[in-house]
Amino acid sequence: MSTNFVRLVLLIMTTLLPLSSAFAGGADHPNMGETLPLYSVIPFLGMLLSIALFPLLAPKFWHHHFGKVSAFWAVVIVVPLLISYKGLAVYEILHIVLADYVPFIILLGSLYTVSGGILLRGTLRGTPIVNTAILTIGTLLASWMGTTGAAVLLIRPFLRANAHRKNRTFMVVFFIFLIANIGGSLTPLGDPPLFLGFLRGVPFFWTFNLLPHMVIAAGILLAMYFAFDTYFYKKEGITVAPDDGTKEPIRLEGSYNLIFLAGIIGAVLMSGIAKWGEVSIFGIHRAVQDAVRDGLLIAMAVLSMVFTPKTLREDNAFTWFPIKEVAILFIGIFMAMIPCLKILQAGTKGELAFIINAVSEPVHYFWITGILSSFLDNAPTYLTFLSTAIGGFYPGVVESQAVSLLIKENPLYLVAISAGAVFFGAVTYIGNAPNFMVRSIAEEAGTPMPSFFGYMIKYSLTILVPVFILITFVFFI
Picture 1 (cartoon, rainbow, N blue to C red):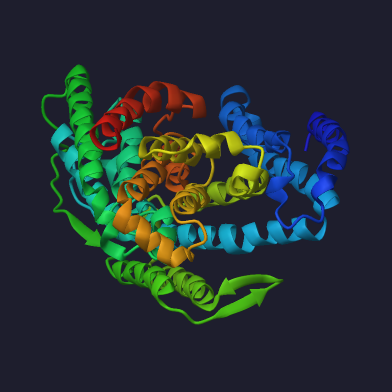
Picture 2: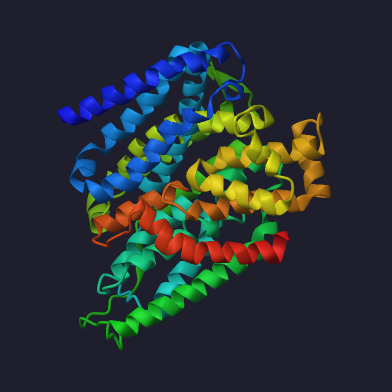
């Protein structure tokens, strides 16, 4: 670690530590979100700006030290919280690590490992029709094998099919839009927010109410992709797909990994259905079925590693760097966003009460849930606004009954929350974990990817947001 970096750490720490006295007023309060000041979100903003600016302004530094940057921002928020809230802070930190981060990274890691053992061989040439077909298939798969599973399964074949193309960046961006996000909107297996809704009483197939929204969003994006791909295909002077004289039939190797993939899906579904009580881990209560699920996911990954030949993974260009990068950066993100989530969860008693109070109509729920999901973890954001909705309509009613009443009497609110949480995950690289993973895999394969802000300005704001505005007028106004 450089001397300047150490000085920067010390400077910010000496600046923020005195702020702990301002936090201390709520040290014994059961909900720290009611006493946390708004400026406690500064470390989270710092983490976001680091991800956005360092790869652009100091790429060599970022490549070698992104783990230290992540650790820095985690320490910057954790230390003041521990000083101010003591045992309560310890509980919240352990809770977000054990109940949120660890299951999150176990699920991603198992899907990444298993999907990385499935290799699509054969002559597959990246024409506009072929590419659009791959994106369509991936979009349909995402709701059943998860956005992470579908993305990791298809991104390498997609990149290999287009290795001869000059303009590939937009292809990966649309891949993120469709397969890593919007495609996961039809079942609780598709995206974490919907799974949390399932755990709280939303019927498994209720999310098919998002089908019209998904069809419009995916249909427009696929049409736009085909138009862009056709334009660049002709601009590159390609009249026919390149042919090196060999035509290898398309076939799937490592197909036994599909069994392990089914095991992962089954384990996730089991954890939402079974009720086996709770177990305490370092004072954090976790459902037994969740712990069993995590063990099964690890087992599926281990079995995949044992049964999949090393040469197959090498042929698939499989490396551990993308999942390592996600694991390191997201522990910093999870730590730094603790104040944001706690303030939001405090509702009208927190510093972000003006946001909670501004939400009253389905259109508000769609956009505010969506915008916050673009930068925060979309799962707790979904839960926050689900609680806001049922609290507004059915105060004092038991949550499971309130959810049933919301579905029966005011379903448009839940549709808006669900669509916002899933769709807006595509707006930034950190909106959904597969986004970061796909970007990392693409860069490893030699495809240049836009910066954090470049992705938002060039693609999200110009392509996604107009689609969301159309969905707003069709469904929520």
